[in-house]
Structure formats: structure tokens, C-alpha cells
Image (tube, rainbow, N blue to C red; front, side, top):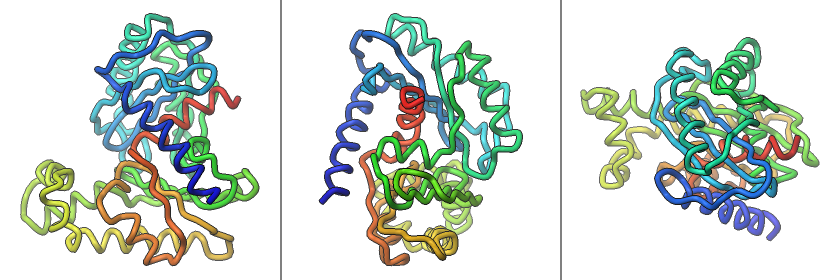
Length: 278
């Protein structure tokens, strides 16, 4: 029951953010405003929250500036983040000064510094660079369990025990691998495969095609959880929104699995919350 209640609270927060993503109107902020910036494989997302942790506004831009969890196009990432921060500032009619970001676990060497530089280039004072599954756990409110963050390029795993992260891992398998197998199966470009993957009409037909990638993700999760207590899996990241992903993971791992609303929004919202936590 506790897990269900936590998920309902998380969904309310996520849905509130979704209603304030550009170009939707936003409330006037009162007090400090914090920004979370998620530079992902398929999208760059920036989220503004108030001092109470209430979502105020968000911006999302499709981008290919990250590959397998590593930033590979610094200049474009800077341009996108700067544009998003400026847009958020105009929408909220306030100057945004404090921000945070996150990186996949295991990519700290160099990647954290580059990520910090991107935010500083957008005139933000960086209060934190945390790992992505930890950011997600701040939204989910979970103290025990495993956050599995499946983005465009990587699968991140974070084991939580009594509210503390005791193990993290990250491997290069995610939504882009879906695109590759779809493109190979239908002999189309990866761009066409991406569009097909997002089309609800095609998704049911595509499940058998992408099943090998799903099996690999489940194998990665099982392998990293050997020796750890895993009462539940919490799925976040845009790739997890593919229909049937959560049921498949529960079947393959044998662990109760929970999927929040709009899993793509969980990590960037959690990044913003890390500012308030700090």
C-alpha cells in the first residue's frame, strides 16, 4: 500500500509538471526558483520548481548531443540549455540563477565536469551534479528498492536501502537499440524507426521485434542485482513508456515493477528537487 501511495503522489507531481511544459501557461513564482537540467540521449529537458518543490514550468528539446551516456556535442548542448533557461526565465518573468544536473552512474570521470560547464555556460550557479537514478528516487519518494532508468542510450540501476544509494551501475543499452533493431528488421533509417517506435498504431506489432533488446535490459538488471535485496523495481526514462515494458520486466525479473506516469519527466524533475534537498 505504501508503494502505491508513493506512486500516486509522484504521479500527481509529474502530471502537474506536464501541464506546465512549454507552451502551457505557468504560475508566477513566489520565492526562490530552482532548475533541473537533464541532458539526455534523445532529449534535453529543463524543469523549474519553487522553494516548496512544486513544478512551475518545463522545456523539452529533441537532441542528439549524448551517446551512451557521454556528452559528445558540447556546443550544441550549451546552445540548447541556454535557450531553454532563457525561455523559462521569460515565461516565469524571473532571472534563473541556481541549477543542477545529473549523469548516468559510472560516468563521473570527466562527464560531471562537462555537464557542470554546460550549466555554467547558461549562467547557472550549479548546486549539484548527481546520478540519474538517485534524481528519480527523489520524485518517487522510495526508501527501499531499485530505480531502473532506461533512457535513449543507457540503462542505469540504483539500489536504495533505508533511503541511501548503496549501489549504482550503468550499461549502454536503451531506446536507440530499439531503433537499430527496428531499422534492421524493416530496412529503414533509424529516424524512420524512431518515428515508428513512437506511433501507437505500430507499437503492438513492434513488440516481438524489440523483444531481444528488452531481454538484454532485463538481463542487465538481474545481473547487477545479484546479492542485493530488491523488493520493487521503479522504471523511469522515456524508453520505459513503450507499452508492455513494465509487465515484461516484472515477468523476466520476478520483482514487483512500478511505472510512474510520463517516465521521461521523472529524472529532470528529480534533478530540480535535488537543489531544494541540498
